[in-house]
Length: 210
Image 1: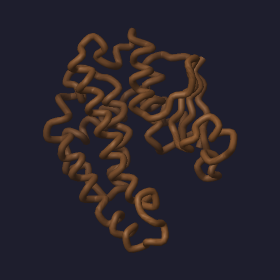
Image 2: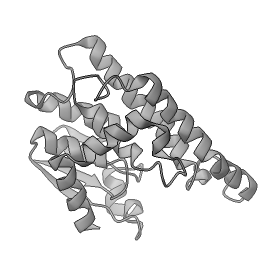
Image 3: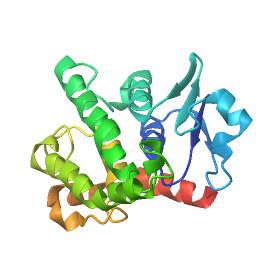
């Protein structure tokens, strides 16, 4: 049995979806950011980064969304969540997920976590970072719109872990003052995901636990 630690409204939604799509046996444990549970001694012993997601496996604890997504896809290959039989396509999937993790998510985080990159007392720098978020996030999604989203799904006709991750981050566009209508292919992808029964189930479970 896997144990999955998450917080509602975070990137942990992507591996939560993957666990469900994979049919994996797991227990979901919500971490309450409002009470700073992610900084508690118990959680820091599990994940010293003090963030989510975290996945406790038989081999140990895994963190970072791309790592969890690939682990789930490889652990449950029958679900077909990643192109494990094609080295190039698997590389393309990791390329896409790495972009979401290292660029899109970071652009978004500048809106409320500027203190990670500049002195918290430097209010001018933090405000400048916030001010640029709509531009940088929009530029990130423009690249996805123009070529990284291959078809109805990220890898074309093949649905998988990239779609779960893209959906998760695309949920934040409005909060970042980015109009989804500017990116019709990304917006259509988001709506397809929202209508999926697995997505509906996981979102409802996270909402009920909040």
